[in-house]
Length: 104
Length: 172
Image 1 (spheres, chains in turn blue, cyan):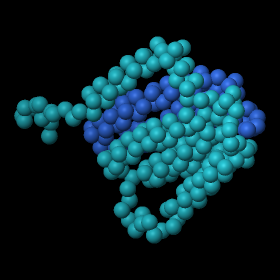
Image 2: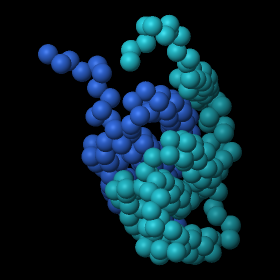
Image 3: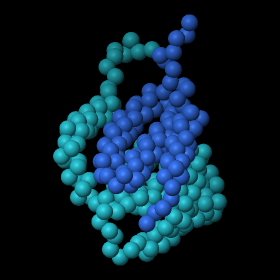
């Protein structure tokens, strides 16, 4: 079966998480920001499954199912908010939604 | 067996980079689906076939389709110029090659699996279900409450409210 060292597997999940973080910090389009959050959730779940495989316990896979539920809720709420933002501001740029900002 | 893991990992990383650096939102979402499929192959290789199926069905099948519907509804990032035709191979050649590599990788990995996997190696869905509904029963109920709150919140936020103001009070 699979004999990849667990450091390499965790490194792969870390690279995916880092890519999601870079996307979240760099992109200003809200769709891309939500996508990056998805990537990060997915890599976190990947770490759980790696651990479940390493210790041969089903608990990690159970945690992945919970992450799946949280992700589904987050996407539904996030996309509803995104629709409202687009309806009000006619743009998806995260920097243009700054009505709460203090203008001195 | 290890080479399949590395190939799927490389496909996942490349398609994730393409997803977060793209210009067209639909193309980026399709690259993200490819990345999720590659991670699903990795789940399969990590002795978690149930999680691999869930990843394809829920992540790539439901969540990403929701994303694509919203992106199409907003109609942003679509340039209707000549460059967006399917006849332009630059638009689809990279993703096609990546998807073909992933498909071959997965088929070869399926063929290399021993005929009867030892039960103590693969974590079967039965064990996951038993653990889910005995040890983690309270967490399942909390997740159900969370999903309920999500449904209500999405319905409330998604509804378009009619503006009720007198026409003299409207700012021009």
